[in-house]
Length: 157
Image 1 (tube, rainbow, N blue to C red):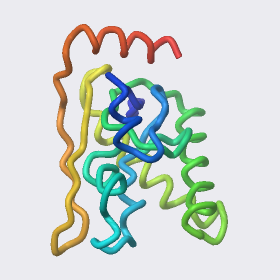
Image 2 (image 1 turned 90 degrees about the vertical axis):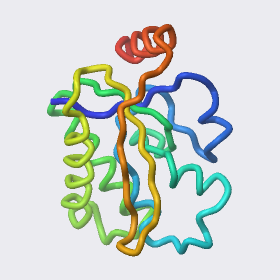
Image 3 (image 1 turned 120 degrees about the vertical axis):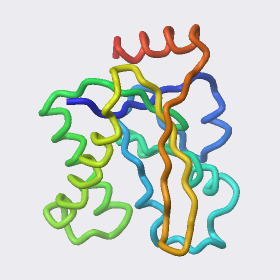
């Protein structure tokens, strides 16, 4: 199975986001983090995370880029469990069991973004419109020397 994994080409994520994901974390869209925020709260670094962040499931920090990577079933299920626990701890879900279906949907959506070859780099652009949050995912063509070294580093982890 394929799943997004955070990647960092430089240290810009450390400046953009209050909490930057570490390279090599399994990642989901993370749009749920902004679902209840009024537009007036989406400013500064929160706005950066909203506009272009993908959520790492290790630190629950943000990353500008992810790459398509292979994930085994046990790790995929662990990611779903971590998301469910995060829903309880950060968003007040009743309990892990109540949060699991939503966590699974988040993971399934993230996996659906990975219909590309392994190591394909993806990014998101997010905006509010009258229907809520709109996400547009795109393939990124990073500088080749950075791609090779960063993808190699992630593959080794």
